[in-house]
Amino acid sequence: MLKRITLLFILLPISLLAQEVALTRVEPPFWWTGFKKADLQLMVYGKNIALARISVDYPGFKVKKINKVVNPDYLFLDMTISPAARPGIATILFREKEKVVGKYLYELKERKKNAGKKGFSSADVIYLVMPDRFANGDVTNDNATGLTEPVNRDNPDGRHGGDIKGISDHLDYIRELGMTTVWITPLFENNQPKYSYHGYSITDYYKIDPRFGTNEDYVKLGESVHHLGMKLVMDMVFNHCGSEHWWMKDLPSPDWVNQWPEFTRTNYRAGTSTDPYVSAYDSNLFVRGWFDNTMPDLNQRNPFVRNYLIQNSIWWIEYAGLDGIRQDTYPYSFRDMTAEWGKRIAEEYPWFNMVGECWMGYPASVAYWQKKALNKDHFNSWLPSVFDFPMFDALSRAFNEDESWNTGILRLYDVLSQDFSYPNPSNLVVFADNHDVNRYLDTQKNDIRKLKMAMAFILTTRGIPEIYYGTEILSTSGDYKGDGTKRRDFPGGWQGDPRNAFTAQGRSVEENDMYNFLHTILQWRKTKEVIHTGRFCHFIPQDGIYTYFRYNAKETLMVIMNNKEEAKIITTKRYDEFLKKHHSGTEIITGAAIKDLSQLTVPGKGVMIIELKP
Image (cartoon, rainbow, N blue to C red):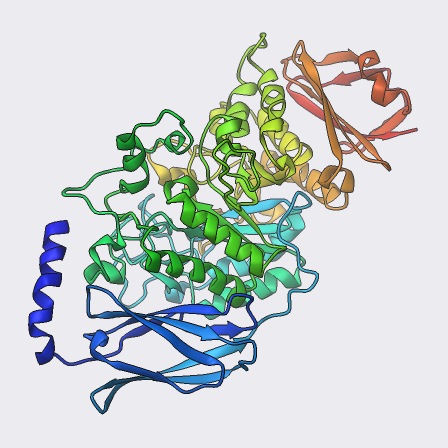
């Protein structure tokens, strides 16, 4: 591939004079006044556009530098937007000799007012939605003109037709369940021949996939989310794009993507990023190898790639009024670029939150990537939040294992005991499963009691809980035949579905029991500052019993988990440092009043959440 592309760039200039100049696209398509950073870089694309002379006549909006690359079909314009620039339409003219060969009306908009805004935090609970599998609200966009993969709901790995309208139609359901934040897997155009539903093979970074809706539909979704008092998190991908991305047919330069003589896959060893003894070979393969053969690896060390991706995030935050970003495969990108990305966003949106997917099993490895980590190499990622993958691993094992010195429920204790590694443990996203792994019920042998224990734990421990859509109705992966089974359709999201699990009438007795269990805790949690910001203290598990407390100056909560099959009567004397000031309480799952705290009976494979009273 590298030799072919290089040859193409060598041959093109020979015939440039015989070819016409044309303008095809400008990205970002518009921008805003009032940013702290006055610089903006425009990617201009069109046939032989490098031959054109550029002029802009607009007060406060000027061309500082014209950057040409090896491919004459691209220009990168360094623009400046002065503090005095006003919103309006700037005309960018492209001339070949005296002839105007292109004109772009570049709009400068006024920035939104963000006073009082907050990003997602430990006061929130994130509901993770895969749009293609959640609900089909608009059947007319199932198959869009010019997009290669049609809907085929019979194929677990095909497109099923879920869309933005389907999510919008069920925002009341999400809010009523008790969620406060919606994270949607990528909605960008994925015009791939197959396996495009998941959204992680992006073919246009400035366009919502028409099978999901339009850019305007996404903006309206954000407005509806905010109207209901919830927050919106966008899923982004910097490490790679889709193999059918429009620029892959005409790269700006050979180093736009990390190229190899033949297809070379990453080693997926994220630990190479922090390994003090790593070989250059392994480190290079991790960051430069392709995630998949349909996912070309972007070279974030190319300054134009770097600017493109950073500006794209800022564009979507401002355009759609985002409250947060989830960054896919975070350590796979060159870390100097992602650190610059985090810093730039923090400068413009100091209240904003971003969480990175750092899929590693040890707290120290994950903590390296959180903002202000005390790293020996002094690296600062500027990434406020990371996913708690070590806790995810612990949750998958804890309730299945026999109790011993280092197995069973002690695994939860052990992970929490290493929170000293993190600059900010309260800003970790805690989860039991997501769209990339088997459903939690599958890992727990379909034992609903274990699912309830896991949900109660992530909703009362430190951090920001994330719950995968369908967990509330006992969704499973079933036969484990690929990722499609981890991302099954939500029953009732499609016309003609035999039942509608968005309603109590459409759920089974067991599903309603799970839904009500989550609903009770989620609605209670919304106003519990002691959960959001309170301190955490736990006691070493004994005989399958794990007890911890959340407390502040006003309130104390007690959580007891029993990992044994049989009910246990617990004598609470060892918890006197908290209980000596409290003599009664209310168990919030059942609503039962507890008049005597000296002994408590905890159901087998069960959990109690107790609001303590004097």
